[in-house]
Length: 279
Image 1 (cartoon, rainbow, N blue to C red):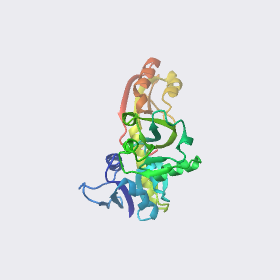
Image 2: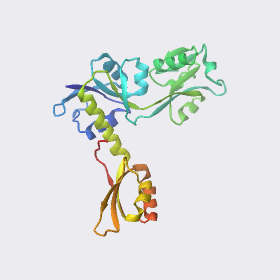
Image 3: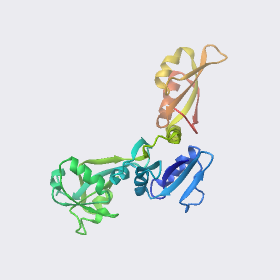
Image 4: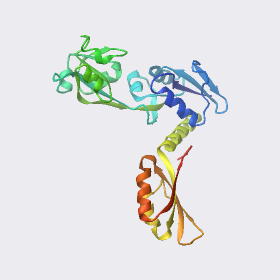
């Protein structure tokens, strides 16, 4: 039975659970349950703190898990990333009092507060900068004002929280993180199935099916607009001068593609959602 670690709380938890359901798995019904067995798919899910998942998977106690790339790298675990899951995106940056820091070299020998000492420490070491890391579990932005650090390294979205504390971002991006599927390295067939199913969920979320009718003479031009994943499907209609075309289109491009097709001469353009896929 494949043993899978799933975040039990935080920004990754709900989306991860939804993806697994869309992928055909049965998770826990009681939100307080620590584990759930899915006998139909021969899988057991374990609901753990996101920060601990890489440790459990890396030790071999669990076979595979969903966590953040930042948490994986910070843990120092031997678990390996299998695939990006394209949610829970975050960016890590350095910040300090406005006007004090010009670049990474200015961090040498000073205190840097962070909730990710492993990740930040490895980054600074790779850049040849030695700083004193102050580990905090939260409210990193307050560390400078409260006098426990001279700079911070934290997740940044708009930077408004940092600015409210009198801090400004400086230096390069430490890491662009996202949710990832990780493995202990064991070669188990269930892992390939899980990976393939989750990839299918991502495709279903990112693409739609577009159907339209088109004069036969315009097929080549239409194929440039809707090339599909490999090639569009072209089927004959009762009128031999017309064909029906079907292709996958990126969901974000739906309306602009419809406009282009209509201007080309396509008619009866219909868009359908994709509920599952194997690519």
